[in-house]
Length: 375
Image: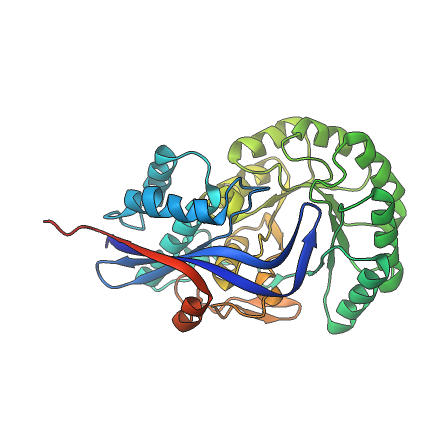
């Protein structure tokens, strides 16, 4: 079985309401869907969600990288040669993890369909009985966030994730305590600053003022790349610390382990380059006693399902936040959410049925790259 053709679609997923985090506000989410075809007629789907603030990629650039660099590297290769595929992609171009993730996910989808197995059975088996997801609240006023949090509790969510870090730390503290008051003392709340508190001093001061809020963890309070600073924050606070934007590669994981910089790491397929490197990063974290999460870059059912397969396969990956499909007013797949659980279908591959007509409706541009059959 060899890959002979790739269709690449640049798409735009409309959101039900703007998604607001510390460094950007998104009225919609741009992504790239990759459709790989093999010489025996199998189809595999992958997804890239580039983020110039995190992965260093833009959608148009990732589209061209897939078209001109990455797809030509994998034509005529078996999707089962996933190590060789990653080696050849990394040799062809540095970085570009979201674009590489699209290839990786599509290859795993093909492997699963070829063996009639869900992807999690190919990377470790079923390590969890079920998969939960939190209610994610983007940045709004303290009153509105508190009202939405209370509604989420009534709906049946079992945990909350609050986005903060947009304007000033004092207002973030007000937001967090307003939500805590609205949902009671027992509701698990995790906080994602998305680098918004920037400096070690401000982060430490703010986190210490939040100690009475009984938070599950504080995620990425300072700027990405400052792993030494993150370690200093962790030493000076009692609330557990999660690294997110600072976890871009296996080298970052090793540095976090070396400096004891985090209690948790947030692995995202779009940052890691797909399922294959993400699972290796989780294994390294496990060896150091660090708990892993698979996080979201607001992917559709395709990328979200791929992330949940990674979660399912590893005991050390204990949480997930892949809720992109719930935020869209239109998308292309059918990942099933049954609050507070997500239900993987058990079908071969990533288990997602892709609506091709809907994909074409949401596509802004597309191209096809295929093997030149000159033999």
